Length: 472
Image: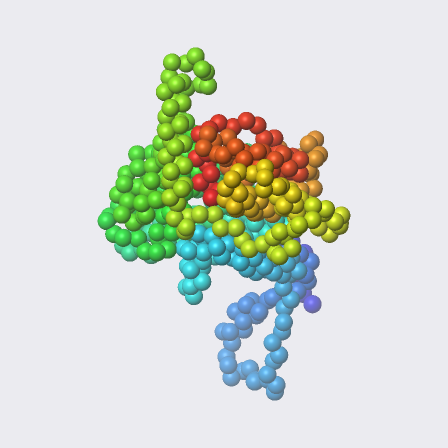
């Protein structure tokens, strides 16, 4: 047997260029310094079982066919085992994509991203973006940091394909790859918000969203052409993300955003237009509002402006179409109405279900004599709030539930992450239009959440009633 040298376990780019690979995780320094995507390192099974079929075919393909004799029996196809690590990644990819799609069947992504992903000629750009965000969601949900390495690799591949797709779209006249590009940018924005370092997720998400808006303005919405149904869903999703970005950064709508909203006003409902107008007013008030000082000469003027906005939001909520209202998922029968205030101590019941049982038991324990004369309406609203609290608690990752009550070991982003979910509900009780009976009930639920999750619920202002739109 001929000695071919010691096989290298370095990554493929370093082997091709005959560079010394330092084999760092998640990628080597040579690829990182050169701006390349490190393909990973070969395992022992890759070194021991090397496929040399191409080299043999290239070597003997130039020989005279008459000199070679046909074999008496057809050769058996040799099965070359795949590396164990690659099998794990491929399995995780299939599970992650299937799980991500099943969990987002009711989201707006199912209206414009999933139909493109189901096409037989789906662009590799969208495939890589879907795999990256699916792996990131699975790693976050199952507390598997090892899955973030292949997720970042897919993210790098998606960014490279995104750059090539943007260059190709400049030379094409039709839509071409633009639908896949827009969907990929929105998926990569979600990936950046999940995987970025603490404190950088919002900034990275904002960059992707504003980049998608710039593409939409410069490549699609310049002419008077009507949007298709998937394109309109993408447009509504992007505008909603821009609204949230303006609220988070305490900025106002850009002139380009106002121009696009005005130019495409015939393609959205009247309720949606009024809602966007109220959000625009709120962003302007927050941007120009002076410091909270009662002695400031303009404080009374701004207070009146906030009260007017609060009143208009309440009027719009009362006339909200059913398609925009909050719909809680159906609850199991044993959680619907539990007449007994006693909760059985069982170790298999998660804390969120015990919290809901306790909440519903408190609802049943309340007597009708102490409630508002419109008892049926009050009970209906209480049931809606209780179902919302269940959904909020169910969305808290399991790794955050374990840190409940341990303020010293709780990570800095944990309280903020959960607080962003409960924030609209906690602000509802502070509105001047919220009935007194409902305020007491919401305050009680907030105390339960503060005890269970460790939230720091402080005072609120009346104008924060506006943010109920993001929940209901």
